[in-house]
Image (tube, rainbow over all chains, first blue to last red; front, side, top):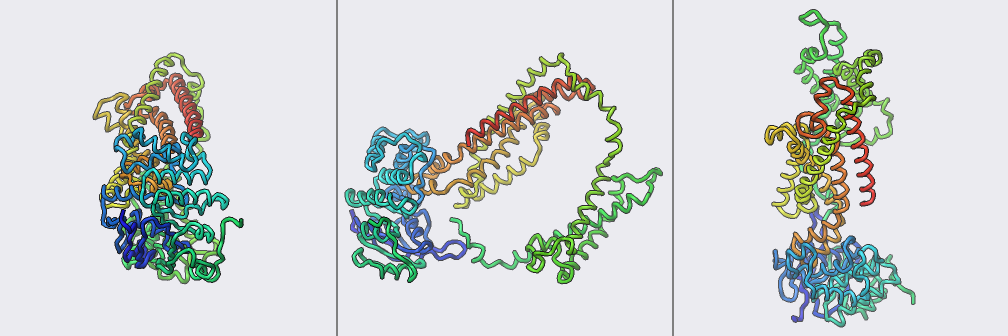
Length: 258
Length: 365
């Protein structure tokens, strides 16, 4: 595995209408890192993450994923690249009417036989793997439930299992715990940490809570108005740097006061 | 990605500004033309003028007597004058529609603006003109009821003779509606994705498909099923199949509109998530879009079947099969007892379908 998981060079994104979401961002993520991206809402964090798997097409700049350029990829080449990048969303983005197991199985769509996937018939070894993924996020018995019957924390764990199902080398997590009850945040973050620590998956994650950052990040970068304004390790991160990034009025929040 | 600030950030090009101005003044010209022509219409109609036969001119003849050209020129001048003098007279109706009300006129009641009185007068004129053109005869309506009493009596005393034939054709009517709906589903299903803006805006080819499908369906929907029935009767001959085809075409167009609105309202989240797994466009459709739209699609389809049952009772009037086919000659011959039987059968069916479809749709959504 190459030493560089993601290399971003002079990435710029201008939305139609002239909003400049990213301005000349250059960044390298090493394999095995747990990189936390900080910044106020609207600072370009989500856009940055979505440029990495091309859910959003950048206006200028180039991105390499494990040495392969994704900015120029099209068609099946792009889909192969996406398949090795798992993504976790703030709103979980499960297919609510599908079963939990089918939601996890949809993680294998990138490699699934096309016509069988259209009638939701997946190979037995994929079903086996999907059940194993559910075990991993402690939802072993819930495969048959409808996705929207689960609680928020459980749904996010299903989403993690779906990402795991892709057998990715890179995980993008866009505010994975922001819509969860503070008490549940660690339980979800621990599963993402496990992917990073036990599977060696590189993680790029946007987070806000200072204690979560200090607990899970191996490195941090911060964006302000689409520009990279900070880069450093979790040890150097304190109230002062927080104020630098979020502005003087900001107060560091923590999820639990234990 | 939608961008809420898009409008604020993009400067308005000059041609677009001119287009809006043209739109504003165009609306005013049309309103003035209508006001002037209707005034002239009423003046002539009440002037007691007599036609070449010596009788009072009929409303239709008055329509031929109006000075359209003169009024159009006058309307243009009046509309322009109002736009130029809007400082004194207040915003004209077209300007108010296109640009919105200017600040200083926001709280003025309508009765204190020239625009308010103009619109009120226009509504009055339309009512009077409409009364004359549609030949409303209130006195006849209120005094000549006895002429229709035969029909009412017939409807109240349905004849049993036609019951059997009526029931047979009623079965045909319901199946006719069912087949038309069933045939419409696959076509509407496929086309609705092409008629949804959120799925088609990403590339040039699908944008073209969107425009074509939308335009085609709008046209198809604008043509009444009775007209489609006439077309298909000359194609496949008189009978229920022509009715099936007529309702099918109309249902496809109607369902595409309803379906595609649902597709446009889906949560983009799952689409994003499925795309991110490396799925192909068809797989994204299958996993990200379809599961979200199945319940509303089902609901609309049942609703459409309900509508088709209503329509299929009429489609027989022109030869499209179903119960209307035997209803029409009996109306023409004045066999009111038999008409009564058929009307009752139709009413019961429509009523039952209405309740059934409402109940089922309640369950689904």
